[in-house]
Image 1 (cartoon, one colour):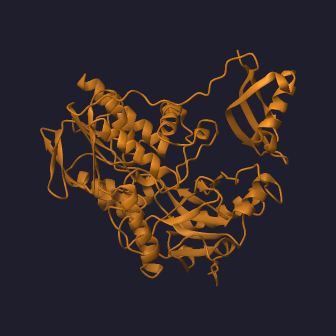
Image 2: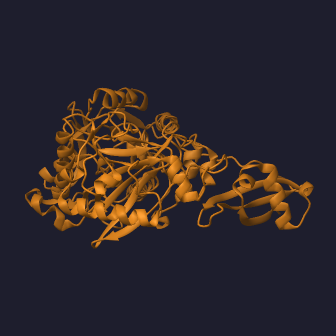
Image 3: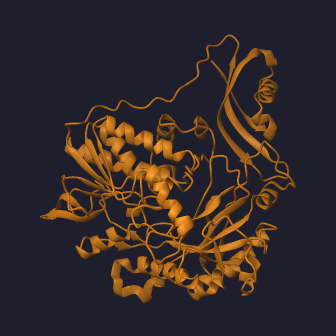
Length: 519
């Protein structure tokens, strides 16, 4: 039997196999030469002390023990060409993993994705970044793979109770992700690698007899006697099915409006809104690792911070070490920011959403919109930012210390946001209560992270798509909509997930519920 080990080592020891074998041998009190292979099963960073340490846990195989490299194998996916059909609206994590689970259970998924496949989608992203042209169906939020494809690929989720996190990560490895994501405590794939993985999933679905249709925006639900019968797309094509998984993501406002118009029950949901802050990665490294130079064996440092300010939570969101800020508008006439990192996280800047939690009473000025009040609140801020920044995809920006002191920055340094910035007092973008909390909160952040509050940091506004402003209620046991039989609200857009992993898990759950019902 291989011997287990778990201890802390220096970053170079964790990175260099020779040094790690030596450290493991010392802990096990055996000679280095007795160890055939060291396999690290889990790895995490402990930066709480001045000297950063790496927690490692794994197995040491001795010379006389059999060792075989373990390969991640995909489940058996049968041919479902002639099986019962289930429609999936949306080709993001929830939709794709629902499709895979349906195939496992012998059902045929038909994915209707409003956007384009990943390669064509790149052309529209370039037009958004360079020419400030927003394609409402193909952008950072919509298209094959959903928002995650070109927005980083963070795989960390705080809620282990949602389902089998390891299963989702193993599937991603099976479809081409680096096996290291099985080891890291905070796994991350990277925007440069996700498109190929997403395409591999699509090919598997099609090869098994499932269908994936692009540029098929759903414009109507066919409902009879409070039961779904199918859907209609913008080209007037009718797709018939008695089960429909609604996995459209948190920015599909037209779907929320369609549900509202058809008097299908939806609910306003609280979310968070704020700015995206950009520092140099070197500064974040120095703060988090308490060092002047990070070295070759530590990854770019992330940060996570939460404060209570005037009875509201203000916190970091979707932090991107070594990443860039991206334009994430989904319609003309609005400005939205988000962030992402490549797989190596090796760019010179770090960014994070810094957001303020909202409450239902904040949406009172928009109460005439009913369940869409939060969405309209969100949209009003995005449209205001667009107008203030010159009606382009340039983003309102301000240096951090200037913002806390209500000073319009005389010069904004070049940031990673490609469309460009417009210097503004960001208090003009947000309602007063959000502005006040952000101003005070950044001062508190600066006290907790010495050096964080600096005028070299630039704030970009707004960071507004943190989660869905709407929840689509469903039965907690069957996962069907509580009003419409056969409709399965799913993932982030329905208010039941918050990222790639949780959305994928929710997609699997909905697929399993459908399979059980049909069985």
